[in-house]
Length: 466
Image (cartoon, rainbow, N blue to C red; front, side, top):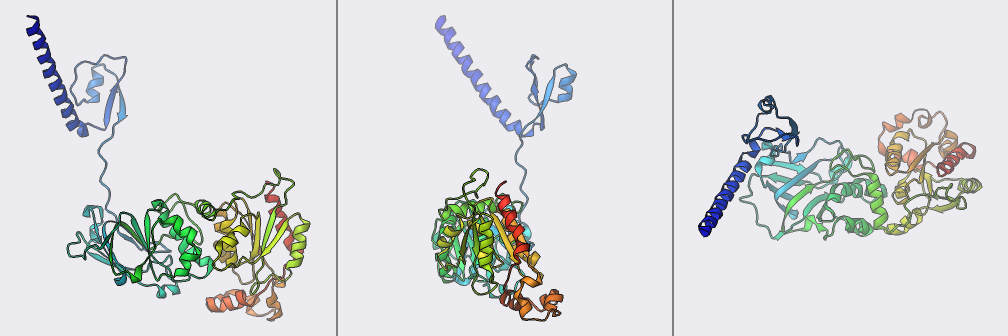
C-alpha cells in the first residue's frame, strides 16, 4: 500500500514537472508577442488564475491593480549603411565589415558584407575610387595615389586569400604634405589616432606611397596605435584578407578632434594624453603659482632662425625675466629626433612664438599651460587661429593671440607704406598661396613693441595663478 502510494506520488510529480517545462517553453515562444505595455502585479493583491496574455484594461476592471512597465522586445532591424561617405568637408572615407580582400600592388580592395542586408542595396556591385589622404579640394591631392574599392554581394570570383588576418585594416597615403611638421600631425597623425584608437592596437596599417623616414621619426606614436608590422601597400603582391577595414582616415578640423563627429567620443585631450604617455613625458599639469609660490613658471620662446625671426628677442627675454619667468630659448628643430623636442617642451608652462610649424610642439605641453601665438602682418589672423588657437583650447591649454602692427614688421623696410601689402592684404591673397607665402611668411621678420606686448606676458602669468 505505502509503496504503491509512493510510486503514484513520484509519477505525479514527474507529470507535473513535465507540464511545468512545457508551459515554460510555451511562455518563451509567446513572449515576443506580449504587448510592450506589460504588467507587474502589486504585492498587495492576490493573483488568481489568469491567461498568459493579459489585457490591462480588462484586468483593472476586475479590481486587480497593475503597474505598467516596459518589457524588452526583439532588437529593431538596423538600417542598411552606406559603405563610403563622400559628403564630409575634409575627407572621403569607406568603412567595411565582412569579406575584405586587398591586393596592394594593384591598388585594389574587394569587399562583400557578411550580410548583404546590412549594406544599402545601391552600394552593392559598385566601384569607388578613393584618394586615402585626410584632405579634399586641395592641390596636393593630385599627388595621392588612387585606391579602387569594389563591392559585391558575394566574392565568388575574387582572388584567393594568401594571408588571413583576424584584426582590422586601415589604408592611407603617406605622401601629400608629409615632411612639414605641422602637416605630419594635421594630415596623418591626428587623423590616424581618430581612426584607429578604438581598435586598441588590434589594427594593421597598410600605407600607400609609404615614406620610411616618417614611421621611424614617429615610431612611438605608430607603435602605440598598432601592434602589427606596417605594410607597404604599393609593393605588396599577396592578397591580404581582413574581417574589417577602413579606407582613408577621419579628419574633423585643423590639428584637432571634434568629439561630436564619428567615430565619436575622442577629444584632443585624449590625443595629448596619449602623446605624453608614448613619449614618457612626466608633467601632466602646468605649475599653479598659488600652490607653488617659490617656483618660477618656465617660458619657452621658439627662436626661429630663418624666417619670421623675432629680431629683438634679447629684450623680450629681459622683460619676461623681470615679470618672473624662467626663460628658455630653443628652435625645437630636432629633425627625426622628436623625443628631444618633446623633453624640452613638456616641463614648460608657457610657450610663445611667431606663427610657424614649431608651435606644433604644443602637443607636448602639460594641460593648463599657456600658448602665445604672434601673428605677422598679412590678414592671416583667422587662418592662424584655426591652426593653433582652436587646437590649443581643445587640448585644454590657455591661448593668447598677439597680432602685430605695421611698425612691428620688417616689411616696412622693404616696401613703401602705401603698397597693397599694407593697405590691401586681400589683394595679395587673391594672387594665390605662393605669392602670399613669399611676402608675408618668407620675407617678414618681427620686432615686438615691448610696451604693447608686455600685457600679454602679464596675462599669461596671471592665468597660472588661477
